[in-house]
Image (cartoon, rainbow over the protein chains, first blue to last red):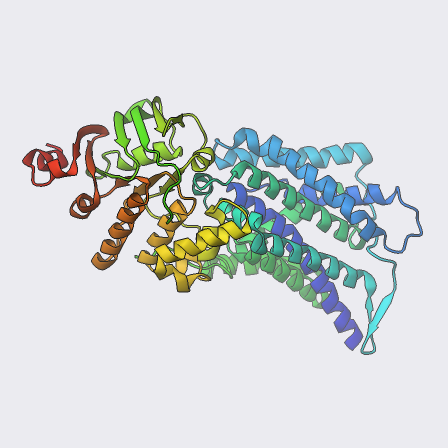
Length: 296
Length: 240
C-alpha cells in the first residue's frame, strides 16, 4: 500500500516535471514575442519522434539510451525552433498577434500531417532514459524510469533557471521579453533574444517529447492535447509568468495523476477543467499572478 | 558620471513624423550643444515625446536628418543608436518590472564584467537613493526611485546625447528638485541633454536653451535668458 502510494507520487511528480518543461518553452515564446506559438504541442510530439528516430540508430543494448539521445534531440529541436521563428514569426512580426497565431496553427498542422504522411499514424515507443528496474529507498521500490525522468526534467529546468537568472544574456532576454522597444533602445539585439527564445523553447519541447515517448508512447496527433495543457498551465500560472506556468503545469499533472488513480482519467480531465474555470472566475491573473504597477 | 571622452552634440534637421498620412511632428530642427540642456516645452500632444522618440529611433521619421556629432543616425536601428551614444529615458519610465535595480543597470551597461560593475558603482554614487535597493525589483520601488533608475539606465553607458521625457512626472516637489539637479550635473559632465518637460519653471532653471512645440510645429527656439519673463514666450507656451 505504501509502496503503491509512493510510486503514484513519483509518477505524478515525473509527469509534472515533464509538463513543466512543456509550459516553460511555451511561455518563453509568449514572453519573447507577445504571441502564442500554437505549434508548440507539435514540437513536443516532433521531439518524441526525433528521439525514436535517433534511438533506432543506436545499438539495442545500451544502458542509458535516452540520456544518449537527449543531446541530439535538444540540438535538432533547437534548429526546428529557429525554423518556426523564421517561418511563422519573423515575416509577421509587424502584423497583429493574430497573424502569428494563425501561422503557428498552420505550421502545427503541417508538422502533424507531415509526420503522419512520412511515418504513419501509429504510436511509437521512445527510448527509456536508463535501463529498466527498481531502486529501493527505505524499503520502498520505485521505478528507475520515473526517477530518471524527474532527474532529467529537473536538471533542464535548473539549467534554464540559471540561464535566465544568473547570466547577463538571460537578463537581457528577460528585459527584451518585458519591453522589447525599451530593450532595443538600451542596445539589446532583440532579434537575437527572440531567436534564442524560440530555439530554447523548442529544445525544451523536444526534451519533454523524449521523456513522454517511453512512458506514454508518441503519436502524430499528440500535439493538440499537449498544447492545451501548456495553455491551461500558463493561464493558471499567470499569463506570461515563466515560473508560474511551470508551477501551473506541475499542478495539472499532479492533479491529473492523483485524481485519475482514485476515479478515472476522464473524470480527472473533467475536474481539471472545472478547476480552470474556477481559477479564471476567482483569480483572473492566475494562481501565481501578481499585480505589477507603476508607483507614484 | 565621468567627463565625456568625446564632447559631441545632437543636431536634428527638418525632421518630420507622419502617421497614417497625417503629419504629427515637424518639420523640426533643433541643435543641442555638448554640455548643455535644451528644454522642449509645450502642451500635451504638442509633439515633445514624438521628437524624443524619433531621435531614439523608436519612431520612424518620414524625412529630415538626425546627427550625433558628425555621424548621421537617421536610418539606423535603436540598438545601433544606443551604441553610437544616444540614451533615452522615456515618459512613464518603462522599467523592466521583473528585473532588480542591479539587473536593470547591468543589462544597460556596456563592457565586460569588471567594467559593468564599475559603471553600476558610478550610477549608485550619482543616484545614492538606489544604493540600498540593489536587489529590489523595479516595480517595488517608489516613484522617485523608479525615475532615478530609469535615468541611470539611460546614462550608464555614458551617452553623449541624453533624451529625458517628462522625468518629473508624478514626483513630489523635493524629489523633483533632486532630479533637476542631477540632470544639470549630467550636462556639466559633457552630455547634450534634450529634456521634454511640463514643469516649466524647473526646466527653465537648468536649461541653456528652450524650444516650444505646438501641434507638432516648432514655434520658438531661444536662449533661456531671453525667454524668462518674456511675454512672447508666455504666449508661445500657451499656444497663442
